[in-house]
Length: 299
Image (cartoon, rainbow, N blue to C red):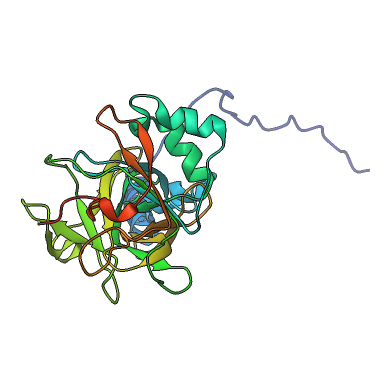
């Protein structure tokens, strides 16, 4: 008969759940090495990202409505030495209301009359000046490389219909840029101290536009020979990209005509209105009695 004896289970010692596990020296050294290598890799990745991505350019992509990068506004102005003469292509008979307005003292310098004649098709005679205000709208650097007129159609002879004659005055105007519109391909030029055409403007000058900052450019265009229609085209650089913007007069091209004079330097028009001492305008029976200086007195 076999006798089976009961055996007591062997005791096993189990550590308490919250007893911290000890680390060996080798394990500690391995962990430190991994930490150092990981930090180096992350730092390298950040450096690489900065090299690949232009942070300013990425920021510009996130901004809405700034594809052009520049906000441009333009206004027709009269510089201190400029007259306010205007011409129309045909003989023009003003109505009673316009006649009364022109007869008012100071009417020749009244913006309301100026705008009314402009709306009726009157064109600046001799010179047209513009105030161009530019505002940078990108994080990246913007540099204006060139501004020049683009003609619409062919240049033609000076208008010879109706002249509203308000000759120039003696003064020292302030401007940044001047264009001889009779040149084969008019370029922006500096202005000499006497108001004459200087060196090409963009040979040594640039216009830089930081974000949200403005720069104002006073531009004079002049002609002695032609009637012309044009808009201004501006080329500028954003980062490595060259862009362009066309600038109009409230959506329409600018217009300018030369004074129409005969060989004896007498005005040659079918009808004319001239300036009175009180700066009102009166009808002139013989336009040839008027002078032949308009726009400004060129040196």
